Image (cartoon, rainbow, N blue to C red; front, side):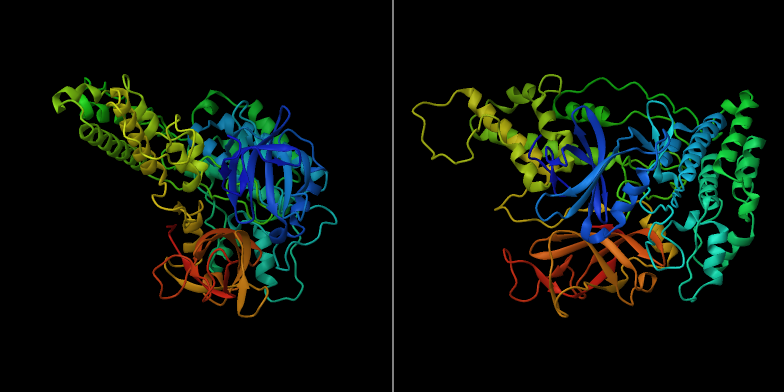
Length: 622
């Protein structure tokens, strides 16, 4: 595996501060998180851009060094990387083997007893942090990991947390955070201090407790107590109106839990629990009085899936191979809480101060079975394999193979001819490789040298095995190119591949009135007023007056350098709030992606573009 390239510009096997990188866990606007090891210890290694984050990276270190609790992610080490001219700050933390809370809830459909135990552990983790003067300030589902082995939750990502004497992160009225989890008192302060010079809200432990109440409400009911407040009327609703009681939304919520959750969401901080420790005591008392009804799943309509019908008898030849392959590729069905779309199992976005957490909002409620993302992949795999086998068959015919009827047994099922399956299914690491790196995997193992040898006519017909070898090589190459999109001509640095928007980006943009296809401008505030030399990697830029929903916001994303410059921005920060976006560099009036270099600037010269570039809101990075 050593030497293979991962997204994030770090190769497997690279040593960072004595830790050996083993794989990519997640990435976002200003860095990436990797699975790494040092000796027998496994860690989550967060790499953050020094230029983009400034002093924010050290902030999380200062916080984690103060804390030592089983429900808070643990600190291991930190430093600068590389040794000469370092560009990255690394932070090695405990590797939590588990799932984000939103995914865990989607897949497990917990009972009230499990939900209470989870909230109790989180209350204890917050109590330990508050005892050290630390506020998390961004408690939400995606910043909570649930251990697979024990089912216990762990608070992660203290990147925007606070402690006595910590410097301010922004000059905005509110510190960075997520709108849906803002307390009523924070929103009221911003409303009353809008336009007041130097006004700054100082969060308290009550803000963390309110955010935990929002999380607990979602676990119990499958929905947030309030939508993310965007308009003045929505803000006022959160400030003054109580949410619908959890038990009214979901009758399976026991009365004691309804009371605890509702108290956490009280409008006045003094009406909530006086501390996280007091919340833990209330949850302990509720668990002690729990009866058997607390063991029923919270989602009443979570049903066992129907049994799959027995597969039909196998067919002969290629038709049988494809039929059996489709059955083999179909994932086993399992129950899931209806209305909870399963999010991807990832660490999530990595933005300013947020390189190790997810940012997805709680998953949307969809109809059961609405997500079938494996079907396009299975279809593509079958098509690629069909192309490979067809090409192999054609080459075999051309080289003098036996008549078609005699060839039929060679179209065997995977049980008798596994080569086709191996060729069509790339290794597990292939998804992390760029196309140019993946292409050599299609070579026959026997071809030790990449140098092309001159064609020499054989003195006698080659053995029949060579015909099969050529056919197999053709099948491997065709299937690998279909599955991995390897280039067919001279190696040219490709445009970045298609990828979906960050989780929750479309909803966040819609809430801010951003329309798909809306155009705007972005400013690279460095260097010459007209032109700027850019480089591959992470960048933060400033939005101009348009699009209006992002006016004067800061975008975090990545630049990719080729014949054109491609920019994909996945996080925005505006008015002290961070949210996911799906925005890319765009040249007005040009149907191509990205922006062109200035006239006369071509590879391999350092890329130069205009200081002010176009911007486009997209539904997907194509």
